[in-house]
Figure (cartoon, rainbow, N blue to C red):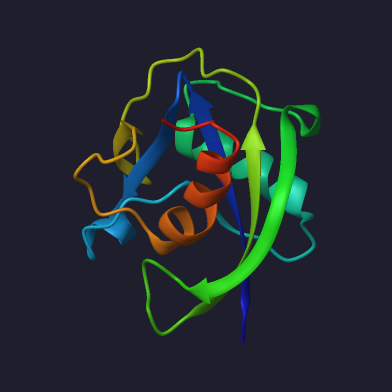
Length: 138
């Protein structure tokens, strides 16, 4: 079964916010804010909920902050045996809270091109080509 997920890209000053969750730390990979879409939840609702859970500190976004980029299928970064269908969004709201680890996220990092970190294929193969072409990440 294919799992529907959302990924939310926060890009500021040419850098992309990436995270290492408890799950992705098992494969030493860095991913986007995001996660699975729950039953009876829209993609937008899932994106808003995931941002609230993973950034926390009372940071909230609305559907007006999100721009849908595209959807693709691939193996999950946290479980190579699982196929995901990710809908990728860019969030245009600046993060105005402190990024502190929580029950889901171990580390936050503002990624710039050529940083020596193990980014997920969703970032490397899908988001980065788009972001480079549109001069969003440098």
